[in-house]
Image (tube, rainbow, N blue to C red):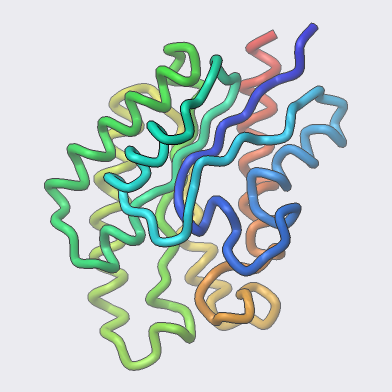
Length: 204
C-alpha cells in the first residue's frame, strides 16, 4: 500500500518563514500523523514568502506538480491584504486556486483544507499601523475564503483567533516579531492533524 501524499500551498505561513523546516505546520502535521502510525510522505510544499494569490498561481505552474494527493492545504491571502489588493480580485483568484487544490486532491473537495489568514496586525511588527483596519480587512478576506471553501465542500480551519491571542505572548512569534514561531505552528498542526487523520482514514 502506497504512502499518503500531502500537498501544502501558500505563502510564508506555509513554508514557516524564520523557523526550521521541521517547525512549519505541514511538517509538524506529517510528524504527528506518523506518530499515530500513518504512512505519509514528506509534504510537497509550494509556497514562498510574499506571495499573493496570482503569484501562487504562477508558482504552481512553475512547480509542475505531478500526481494526485490525499491531502491538500491552502493558506493564501495575507499579502493581498497587505498590499491593498482588491477583495473582488481575491475572490476570483482564490476560487481558481481552490479548483486547482481540488484537482490535485483527485477531484475530492473533502480532501482539501483551507486555513484562515493570520492577523499580522496584532503582532509587534504592526506597531504604529491601524490595527483595527487590518483586523477588519483580514476578517473580510477570511469570511470570503470560508464561504468559498464551504460552498465547494472543502474543509476550513480558523487559526486567526490563535494568532491574535498569542501575538503578545513570548515564544509564539519568530524573531522578526511578525511570523509565527514553531510553537504557534504546533497549535495549528495539532488541530489540522486531527482533520487530516479523519480524511486519510476514510481514504483507505
